[in-house]
Amino acid sequence: MNFLIDEFWAFIPSKLVYLHIYRKIYNVENINITNNEQQQQFEVKKDNQLAILVYRFHKNDIALMHTEVPKALEGKGIASALAKHAFEWAKEHNKKVMVYCPFVAVYLKRHPEYNKLVDKINSENN
Image (cartoon, rainbow, N blue to C red; front, side, top):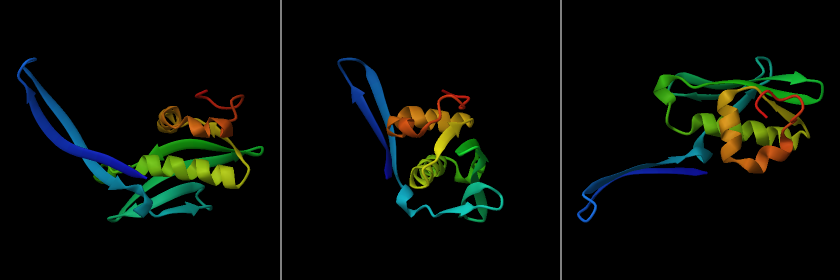
């Protein structure tokens, strides 16, 4: 998955408006995500920094609790890559997902294809 962000300025004379679009490309396929089963978190290690998505198990569900990305790694699509990985992991392991993390809840709104994995009865952000 690529995130495209670039910078573009334009002046529209008839409207007397400056248009600013900021775009930059992030290739999230190159983000290596590991599952630290002992700590129960998906992890991205980059530039001596650690980004995580903490999970817990409840009954037969996986509960996505908290996403944390260090300041130095922000804006690179890492949190989104962690969320996507968590949903793909749940799909592969036939687990329903309980969403407690606010970031994951926002990610889910942008990616409704994962709604079918959500345990709507037990999720906080349904």
